[in-house]
Image 1: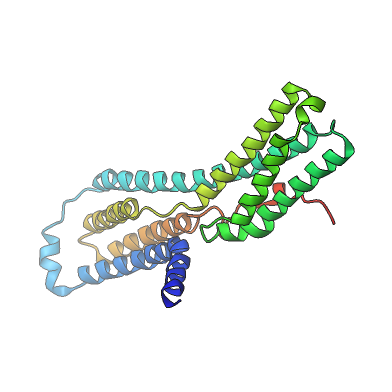
Image 2: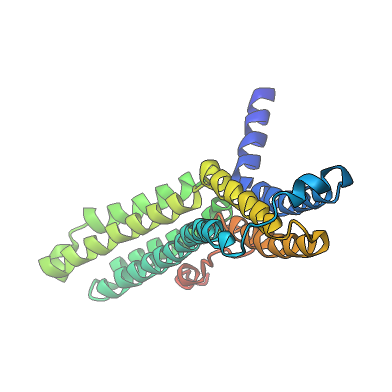
Length: 265
């Protein structure tokens, strides 16, 4: 039991790892800037630092562009995942609505059964599975409800009433629901790639060193420049990192499109 509990704690902590990386990025950037500024202000290094005078400002552009591009690519990965998750949710909801619309031609009893099955799936997805997505998990109960919906649509002789073309379209929409759900579950389980962010952090520190090198004979100007860079880079990296899971705060994808299909009562 103790091992199981420990594994649960590990899993829960791992589900929120990007918050830890964000804190490290924010605190680490300002600690690095403070340490660099303190190192430059050490009187014992004054003569040696002055011997480095001559680094021209355009030198910063080379390293700064590399850092900016790396951060931009990482931000694009994160925000693209959020957009894909939103699209998957709308696809899932649209396919469920299409199932409801395509079965309007069924007998009242069959139509109500499909409506109840769609509503049951929407309820399971929103109320049962959605909270689990924030912990990078999915719901077996929701999987079972979806299987029952697919079995209902595929197992009954709806083709005779709806016609082969409409029935084929109905089954295609049912499979679209499964595919969209699989996509949002997959996107909820994305993790921060430590190697990518380690490379970005290394380039950020080198950029900070290059800023300091340009102002090597003016310690106060160097301090202001380093702090300005830290104030821009640290929070930006942290903002990108905390959005690592599209189904976690502060930018969680809403289940509202699917929730709209839950029948009252």
